[in-house]
Image (cartoon, rainbow, N blue to C red; front, side, top):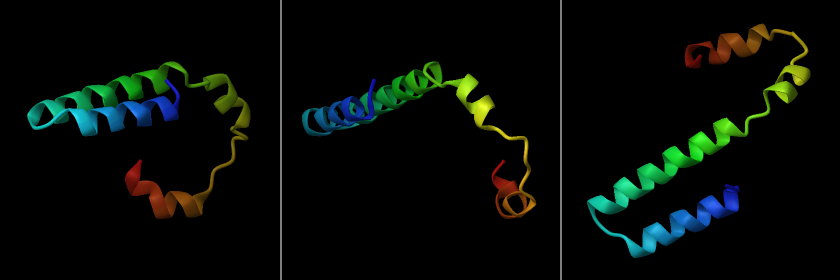
Length: 66
């Protein structure tokens, strides 16, 4: 699912569904989107781009998020 397709589906749900069902359908769509992204994650590319460096400044600033 492309990002554009995802946005179209969100828009369709936003305008056609109301109440609790709207939140359920948006939640299901979000879960589907995350699974789709996870299935298409290119780990080989990520490993190639990782040069092995470690940025202590970033760790200090954002370490609590990890």
